Image (cartoon, rainbow, N blue to C red; front, side, top):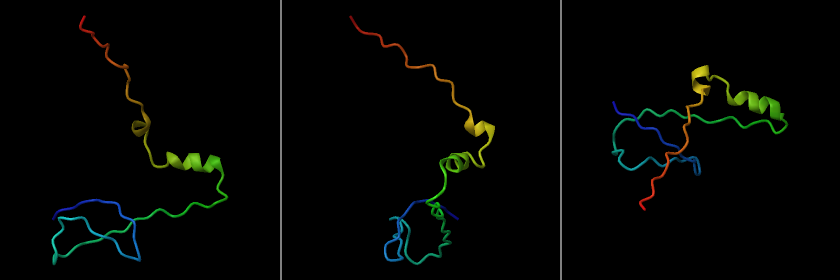
Amino acid sequence: MQAIEFEAIPDRHTIRLPEGIPDGIPLRVLLLWETPREPDADLKSLFASVTEGLTEEDLTRPRDFGREETEWGI
């Protein structure tokens, strides 16, 4: 079994498959979509939902040592 993931925007209830998927083979299709947000949702609940389901490890920042110093050939 092979799997690919791609994003598509339906047009007239149709989604074009990427090139490279041969004709005539069985496919298993999973459709995922985001539910529209309520227009009156407050900013606080919007920010709170951003980190929903993330762990502390997901939220740790990598150490940043800045850029390396450039050596100029003089």
